[in-house]
Length: 250
Length: 250
Image 1: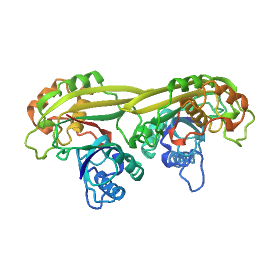
Image 2: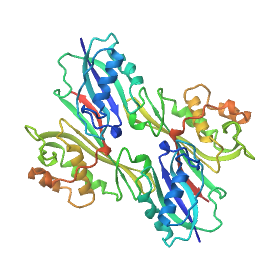
Image 3: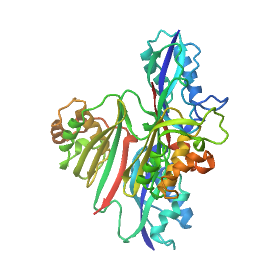
Image 4: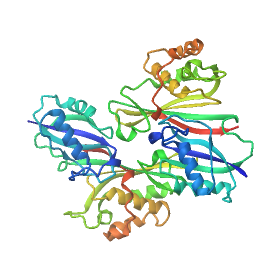
C-alpha cells in the first residue's frame, strides 16, 4: 500500500465545491470516481482544502492510498485523460504513510482576482469579481501590510465557524494591477499564510477593497483586527475571484 | 435617423460565430434581438469582423441605424444589462451616415493566446490553445518579423477563400511569454494590420509555432510567403485562442 499525493488544478465554476455532497457535482466526487476507474480499485481522496462552490485552484492537494502498480509519478499522467477538462492533476508523488494533507505544516498561497472598469469583460467573468470603479492600489497595499504577521483574525472569519482558535499567521499580502485594455484593469491580491479561517481570504479581499475606495483609512485594519468581530470587516468577496494557488508542505 | 457604432466584447465559447445562422446562437443574432427589445424598434447591426465560431473579442465593432431618443453615448449602458454575461458592449457613439464598419480604413489588432506545459490548466482552457512543450520565443519573434510589411499572404489564407487580392499589410507582430505557474507558460502573439484574410491570424500562429519548435528556421517564412500556397504554412491554430482586440478606424 502506497500513499500518493496529487496536486490538483480546477475550474470551480461548475462544481458545488470540493467536498462530496450526494447528488451534486464536486471535485472530490469526480476525483474518487475517475481514480477508482483508472486504478481499478476503490479510491477515496483526502483533500488539503475543502474549497467552496465556485472557487478555483491551481494547486489543491489530494492524498489517497493505493495498491496500483502504476509508478507514483505516472499516476497524474495516467488519470488526466480520463478527468473532465475543468479538473486536471498537475503532478503525483509518493509520500510517507503518515502524511496527512490537512494536519501537516504548510504555507498556502491564494490569489483573489478583480476586474475593474465600466464593463464586465465577458472573457474575465468566470475567474474574477467585477467592480466598476478602480480602487487605490497603494491604499490596498498599505492596508494589506497590517494583515501580515500573527494576529487574531476573528473579524476575518465567517460568523458561526467552529474553530479552537482564530489566531493565524499571514506571511505575505501583495496587491498588483495591470491595465488589460484602455480603462480596464486586472487586480490580483496575493495572500500567503500558515493557516486560514473559513472565508478568510474573501473577507480580506472585501476589506482591502474598502480601503482601496477610501471608505476606511488603511490603518483601520488594526482596529478591525482588535475588534474581533466579523461585522467590522468588509464584505465577503465572491467565490469566483478566488484561486488556491499553491500549498507548500514545510 | 442616427448611425451608431458599438464596440463589442464577447466570449465566443458558446456561439457559432458572429454571423447570423438560422437556429444557431450567434453574436449578431443576440445583438439584433436585444438592441431591438431595448430600443423598441427593429435593429439590424452590421459587423466589422465576422469572427468564426469560438473566437473571442474585446473590441469587434457593430453599426446600426436608429431613431431612438436614447443619447448615442448612453446606448451601451442601456443595452448591457439586457445582454447575456458573455456579450457586452464597451461603448457607443454616433458616426456619420456613410460610415461602414467593413469598408473604412482600419488597423485591426488580434491576440493569439497559448498555454504551454505538461498540463492543460482548467482555468485557461476556454481562452487559449494548449501545447505541452514550450516553444522558443526568440525564434517565433524572428519568424514574426518576416511577416510584417506588405506581402502577398496567399499562403496564410484558408484554401478556397474568394478574394480579389491576397496582398495585405501587417504593421506589427509581437510575441511575449509569462510563467504563470512553475513550468506553465502563457504566450501571447499580437498581430496588427490593415486587413486580414480568412483564418490569417490563426495560420500565422500555427506557422510561428513551427518556427518556435525549430521545425523550420525563422527565415523560412520568406519562402512560405513567396510560395503563395496554403500548404506551405503551418496549421490553423484553434479558434478558442484568438481574440479580436481592437479595430482602430483611421
